[in-house]
Image (cartoon, rainbow, N blue to C red; front, side):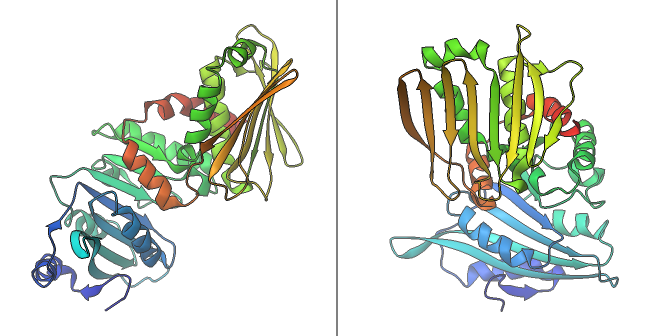
Length: 353
């Protein structure tokens, strides 16, 4: 018995062993609202993801299927474990969610799809959390049956190539595939706060006169910063500066832009090892500065509206730092993520620049 993954069972006996598991345990409900599949090629990911699923099932009932690949071992093999994540009510086990874990070695094409998808709850939607690069396992026969795909573009060494593969997947999907990028989720509270701050008449009147945008981010989260800049430029109606290219000065990237009226805007992204994933968003116009900041690890954002001789401050919640918290936030909000699709082309332009 593995303390994290549970009981190891033959793949052919998974369903029978799950029935035995429920018969031997007194629970009020075996609950599932979705199928949640996690896939990773990182060694040790099964136990890490099992810990994440244990927390996620406190709020999101699911059948969880965890997959880890090790293709450095040429001999094909499959090992499987079953367990249940149970949560207490009035001191007793009340609701439990099933978990099945698979460890694959060798070439996985075909075996992966048939094994994993043969153990889904067939009448429930499929949320598929792909961790890391979109490898050759990520192919049409896989994404064609996914309802919601969770990725993290901040983890990609070559985001341009991975987004190209993702674009093909979305275009070929027959299920109106919803993509949820954790890099985008990390900016949710920043976007919510910035939109709320421009409800102030002073800030709103300064919007057409914005001259600079400054974003400070952790080096690992450049994708989040670029997506935040792409969202701002799309929502404000800005375009990339005609005939001007992005430039780099040390850890600072400069993106020239133009407003609707044609005046120049300088947008900068600054990488800082001491920063939160996104540590600062600042928009400045003559006499007005809108600033949202967060110290690394802080639970709140600090919002500031600074005008001549006056400063207004307030707090807002920060987005989770951990992947499990981000996935939970996305599952709670749901939706078709149409804003992400709207912003994605501008983000890819900035990424290429």
